[in-house]
Length: 187
Image (cartoon, rainbow, N blue to C red; front, top):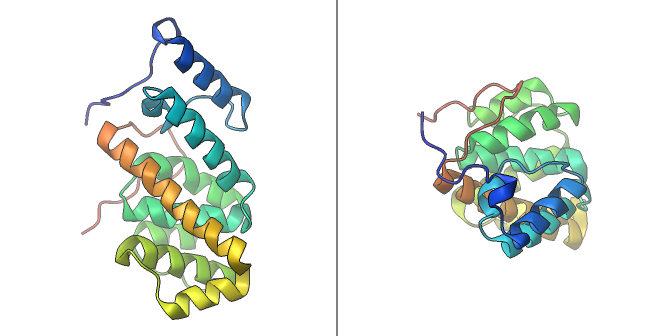
């Protein structure tokens, strides 16, 4: 087991800025400081900006919760990010992403029987993470389904969760208890 490099800070050891950033996170839709916000509190201003961006992308994006969660799962898989997976696989299941599709993403397989919107999000997210770009055909399909705002939000969801994955992978943030299966090691 790896050691969490930037674990929780006791409230009495937080600076005033850290306390304010933590309280803003607690007062928001997350209701608690967990996951990436634990290491991010070392930079309270960054934590505040990240919290606000994430709040929009997770709860109000132009593509909706279900499709956002699918993009998050693809990103978590590409970054081998156990915390994101532990948090978002159950949310994806509650958002009507089927267990078989979640398992397929976990194992690096393209899920079968996706809707057009799900396939567009999956393929766009996979290409962007894996290839560091999106093909013209994949971009055009997403644009036709979601419009420019939706495509920009989809790009941002992938980028934001990549940022969080990088923070947590470097900080070795421990995954919380979760009903989700552990993200399997890639072969």
